[in-house]
Length: 190
Image (cartoon, rainbow, N blue to C red; front, side, top):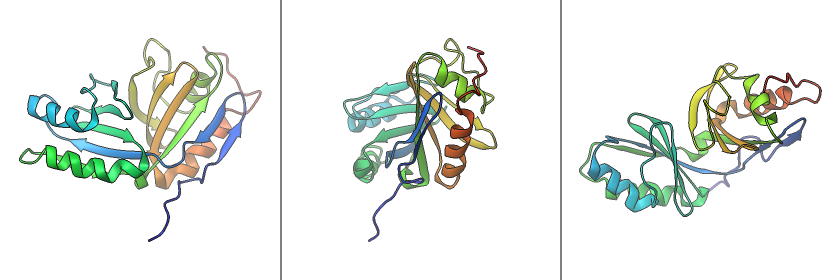
């Protein structure tokens, strides 16, 4: 069996913000009726997270559960635990209309860190999503586009954002973030 490798193999770069691939991250897509209490209980029993509110993020002991759409959640966990989470979620949701898939190796994850509004500034240059703190606060997720490709963005803190995209466009997103964070390219919008 081959060893898992991340999309851009840990690449990082520094500009007016730092851009780094997060490495191997476990991600499980969970689709079903988010309004159903049995669904919520089953997901909570495995993830130890409550269901997040619309566009929200719920944190458990070691996992995060992100609201991705009215019928979709994304579980973020340790890469080596993703398949076990799929099995546990499938068993807990048995008999319910649902989809549970390990998408870890189909995604790339990047972290952008910087001081003050620098992270928002770098991201605002490459996405149509409104990066103002009152529109995209810490702890809320946004599915959007970054230049030409789909991505999800959330702020872990005011100084760090996480970006998830398809693995196939990981190099493109990394290069895009590096370009948007070149020293001297600050716009000063925020």
